[in-house]
Every structure is written in C-alpha cells, then in structure tokens.
Amino acid sequence: MSAALGAERPQVVSHVQQALSYTVFDCKWVPRSARLLCLGSAARGTGVLQLYELSGARLRLLREIEKPKPIKCGTFGATSLQQRYLATGDFDGNLNIWNLEAPEIPVYSVKGHKEIINSIDGVGGLGIGEGAPEIVTGSRDGTVKVWDPRQNEIPVANMESVQGESKRDCWTVAFGNAYNLEERVVCAGYDNGDIKLFDLKTMSLRWETNIKNGVCSVEFDRKDINMNKLVATSLEGKFHVFDMRTQHPTKGFAYVSEKAQKSTIWQVRHLPQNRDIFMTSGGSGSLHLWKYEYPAQRSKKDSEGCEMGVAGSLSLLQNVTLSTQPISSLDWSPDKTGLCVCGAYDQTVRVLIVTKLNKI
Image 1 (cartoon, rainbow, N blue to C red):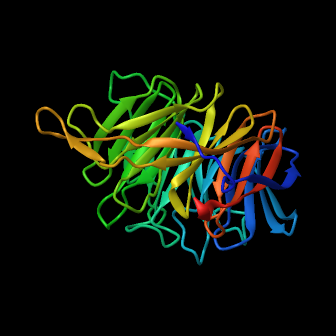
Image 2: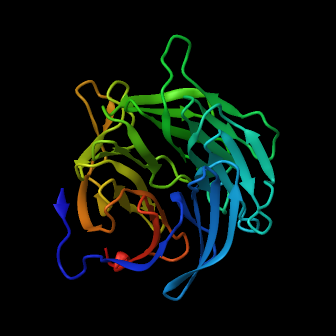
C-alpha cells in the first residue's frame, strides 16, 4: 500500500451533523434530489424512517414515519427515476417497497425471511444496468433471495445451504455483472467468512472462497458492467479487492488485501463517478478513502497455460475519524461528486464533502 501525498490529496470535510433520537442502521440519498433517508430502530423497538433535505449547512426534517418493526437496510436500486420507490428489509424478515410521497402503507410487501433481513440491494432501476428490476435480500435465516417486485410473493431465486450443511448468517449481498438482458450475479458474504457468487443466468454457484473472518460488506465497483472488481470487508479490519475479470479453474480470482485498521470494517462504497475510488467505514468511527491501481497486465498464463488474474495495488488517499462509535452505513450521492452521508452508532447522521476527487 502507498499513501497519496501532496497538495492534491482529497480532504474529508464534515459539512452537517444531525443528532438523532434513535439508532440509525442505514442512510441513503434519494436519487436526483438533495434529500436523504435515515432508517433505523427507536428505543421502544419500532422502526423509524426519516426524510431530510440538505438545505445549505443544515438538514431539514421533511417527514418521519414510524413502522412496527425496526428497519435494517434499504435500496433504490430497483426503482425507476420517475417513481424513486424505496425497498427496505426489517427485523422481522419483511421486504417492503415504499412510495415516499405516500409512505403510510407499502406498495409491495412480502414476508421474505424467517429472521432479520441484514442486507438488501437492487438492480435494473435508476436507468443503470440492463434487465428486469430485481431486489436481493440476505438474512440471518441463512438464505439469499432474489425478488421481482412486479411479481407476487414468490422469489425468482432462492439460494440456501444444502441439506446437511450448517446454516450460516448472511450479512451482506450485492448485485453485479448486469451488463446485458441475460447476465446477472449475486455476491453474498456470511458470518463464517464465506463469500459465494451466484450466477442468476445459469442458477448455479459460480465461485466461492473464505476470507477467515465474518464478511461485513461486499460491493462490485459497478453492477452494470462486465464483472470488474469486488471489494469484501471483514470483522477483523481487513478487506480484499478481487479482480473479477479472470477466473482461474482452481485459484479463482486474484486479489489484494489490506489491513485498514484493528476494528471491524462495516461498509464499503465505490464512488459512483469513479469506480477505482472507494470508501470504507470502521468500527472505530473512521473513514478511509482508497484508490485501486491496475497492474500493467491484468492476466497471465500459469505453467499449464491457463489464464489467471493479476491483482493491482492500493493507495490510501485520506482517512479521518468522525466518531467514537462505529460508522455503520455509508452512501455516496449519485448526482454530486464527493457528497456523502454516513450514519454512526453515536446516533448521528453526517453529511460529508470529499474534495479534489476529480483531480486524482
């Protein structure tokens, strides 16, 4: 790892801080707007959905809705830019889709899992990627399910442990490879360090590995291109960047790993405007901004003539400590480069501005 030096180094500026009266689990920018959502759990065990508008140097609360169950995660990934419906997963295993203009009752609802939905992702919406709008959910019940919100309550795919295998807690899910109407993959990370790549075109397990520690967050650098890179973060402060272009028959995908800190890396989020820059958030209340550098050649032949990938290198662009508590959620604005929101367990949501990202 190398550190980026000099005057052009990006700075992470805390623009607005907003104290909350509940535990925030996820924060999301509303596409094509200056609004953001905070999702979480009130002290009395109910769910909270708050909608804020960024107005100058303050956050103005537009709406607060209470729901029966705490809300763990949310995504806009499967909605159109016209509707901007939010899909959420809650502590009771419910997948709900909300119209934020009338959020009293969901426009779609299914009891998706027997236990908490830990993670959710969407694809095929927002004008990004090809194919049908779909939502993937990962749960403590050990299953990963893919949903088409245009259909009824039956998942279009259900990935679960085979008979005899012990059930693992799925902590994180992400879509990728959605570059045409047919191709699509789901990556899932589990509490025992397993990473599994499911091919939705062939309905088969395409690849699996284990990174020795619980997998907290996985994300492709872009979900709407030929699989390029995948970042996986872990419980013990380490993360891995896999080059997903070349899969070796026995060695899988080449990767580079980095020990960012001693505490858990809760989240990874790639910059929408530059897929080689990403941010990780930590259990120590810190954020680290990274840049991936490609090698001169991304593949080579092994001794038997099989193509194998070559991993690149990482440089740390900036790091900052914002809180004494874990930063559990992170989201870049899809519209304004460098605008970022994060939620921490100190019951605070922060809007950040990361400077000079266009000069890297």
